[in-house]
Amino acid sequence: MKIFFSILLLLSLNFKFTNAQSKHETIISVIKDINFYDGYAKPVNEPVKPGIVRISNTKYIRKLSNQEKQSIGDSITLKVVVKAGCDNYDRIGRVTLFYVPKGKNYDSPEAKQFELLRIMTPFNYKTREPDNTPYSTTINQLAGLFKNKEADVWIMTEIFGTTSAGQKETIGCDGSLLTYTASVSLTSTKTKKNSLVQPIALLSYFPLNGEDSTAGHNTKEVAFHVDNNIKTAVLYLITSGHGAGEGGEEYNWREHVIYVDGKEYIRIAVNQNCVPYEIYNTRNNGIYGPDIAQERRSWCPGAPVPTRAINLGRLAPGNHSIKIAVPEAKLLNNQSTYYLSAYVAAE
Image (tube, rainbow, N blue to C red; front, side, top):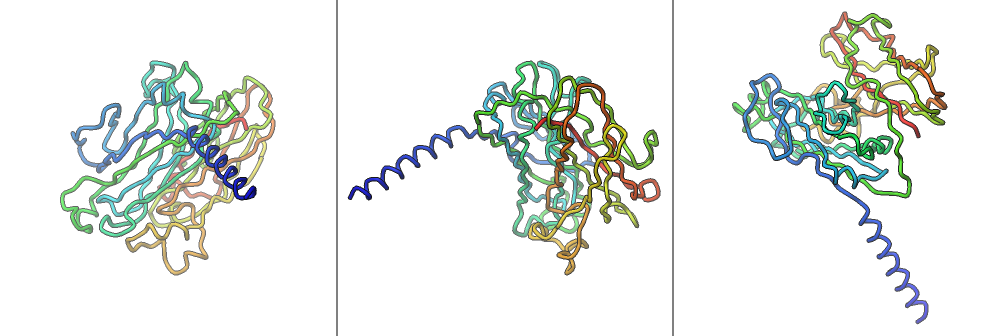
């Protein structure tokens, strides 16, 4: 009997502990069921929900309230769900944080941009299941951005698409400009840790297309300053190649070379296993064929583009530089582009 009551007591304590922990979890709906429209069409005039700004048919942005910022802890997960509309091809989407001085607008010259997540939509039909594609990533390293009372945080969501093909190929899409419907949320848990360290923005969706030869046609270099000693610095990098012409970079994966302060630091094989994302591609395409399990690709339709974390070790106070090179890429000849986003954070 004593054993029975001891078990009941342990279960009761565990239930209370679980409940206490769950109370610390905060879920912020950044946008919910927002419609995105053809990026090549005239701007739509459909009303938007209060607090949300439609920048264009393909971009929406919202400023987090002070209360929302204060509720965010050091464990942060960003979740995106994209519902199929009338664009049945693979497109690029991204969620970007704009960090601006208090009271400034998101388009202020003082704004610092941090790409939180890049996604690729699947080849799909809205009439076939699954018609929702989920994406997620952790952004704990950016927790310090939400703690500064002297700054505002805006979050932009972009999915660029067109219904030019879908209007003809998808049932119920005749004349429609609706490409996708998306929801974005932040789930956060507070811990005893209280990170106030501010990350350093380097690049946000920079088009490496071979036209700027300052550091080399296939290279981008950026300088930055470190105010205080960083014991363990981490470079966060998002990169994806695009260009659908013959021999375009969209169909290749390329080794990236990272230089720190003028010296080669690391080489990265930028490729991805697409098998887990085949289920979301309900429309026939040239990517998910019988050999997909043996292939590696730069990115996968229906998948998030990986955010790669590169440990840089100690960074002393002073001026530094990061150079990103894709030496084997054929950019100018094939009208291809690598979109680069990067920032440095303290671990």
